[in-house]
Image (cartoon, rainbow, N blue to C red; front, side, top):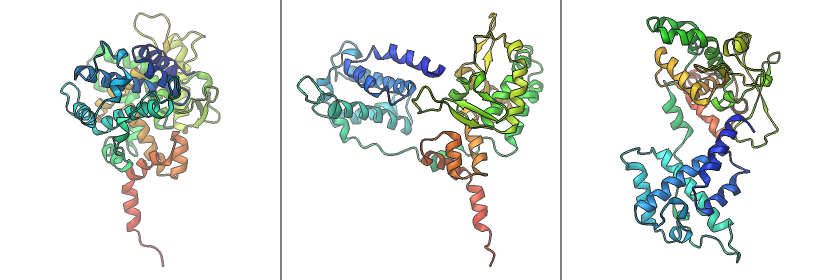
Length: 360
């Protein structure tokens, strides 16, 4: 099991114990098919829902682990409407339409399992009445809408190389008067530039970067072996190619990985960090990589740029030279529907093409 999955699985195992028994049963049912990260989101959604039930007096349970099936059976459509309203208007953290749709979808999955799949000792469904079956969940996350939101928030054309160069050199000029920031940059600039370069030249997800080990690298063939999202076969790593630019940056980083980060032989992580006060380095975390990219992006003049938008930046650039099917394979998408985002992001090219007159 890869590093991120191990961490998420541990969190899932701890969290699920706070849930009602039938939710624990549902999670066990879904575990072979869904990642621990996805199931953790399910658990958080159920936690929100059960706490709302108790706050509204729709459940008499002393804690969320005691919410009964009978209390779920007698819910009315007006209760579901109220819950949807609560999600969209609550003061402390109102949710977007996409998030509300996802939260309701996770509820539908649970209720469907309880009413259509799980059985009691007499072979009857655990849930006799499924109110969530009446809830229509409209598709919100359309590729064209996603593309519209990304426009102007990703790197385009020459900016891909400029951003990598900025991490290596430009950032130091901008923080010249900050000794602490300058010291940290001097220590980590090759590693940080390498991470950005790898994503911008391969389209890897941040979780895939975190999980990389040194022996996953095939420098001669410009290839990496990664655990891809959605692939539950823990014995198989997918080969992913990267561009020449990334090979050069990887070679530069690898030359100083051990000496700079004091990485012990037992540590196989490709990207390492050496926290203050520690004698040995260890695997860099997902959160650290995300924070690192945001730090450079703000100084670069792209405050909306995130580590995931680096992936979008690569994908848009890659799609201009390749078809949708090659782009889908490179990015590890489950279907071309997700990849359609990049077709919409390259509308500028399409609009120019339609204006060209055909030769007689």
